[in-house]
Image 1 (cartoon, rainbow, N blue to C red):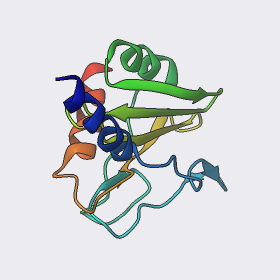
Image 2: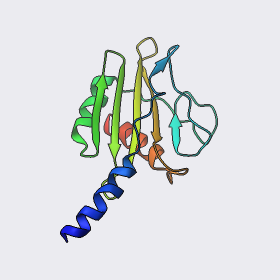
Image 3: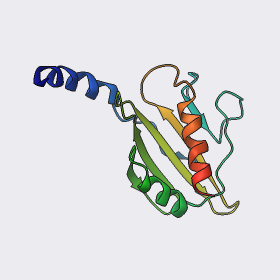
Amino acid sequence: MKKLLFTLIPFLSSCAGEPPQNIGVSEGRLTPCPESPNCVSSFADDEEHGIEPLTANLEQIERVLVSLDEANIVSASDNYLYAEFTSRIIGYVDDVEFLYDQNNGITHVRSASRLGYSDLGANRARIERIRELTR
């Protein structure tokens, strides 16, 4: 068993991938999704990547994230929150960002996989789950 664990550790850590260097807020918007179908964003206007913003504020979202075992809040400010979500079995990491638009009372979102091409709808499902939990 010990040998199996030591064999799996490098594999599991490689599933995390490197933290992206191109995320954050630029000109009042979150980074656009790549062309691959493993990202959703409330700034995207195509069906594959687009998702509605949340009506919750960052305080409500943060309370939900703290309650989720797979979520780790990396940074937070007055209008921006960045969290990493780690899958339980293989350890894949997805990067999730929230940008609060106080003027419109909505929170824009972007959820993207670090690795792979398809996420089988995991990022969309995550945001919809957060939407339900903040109601």
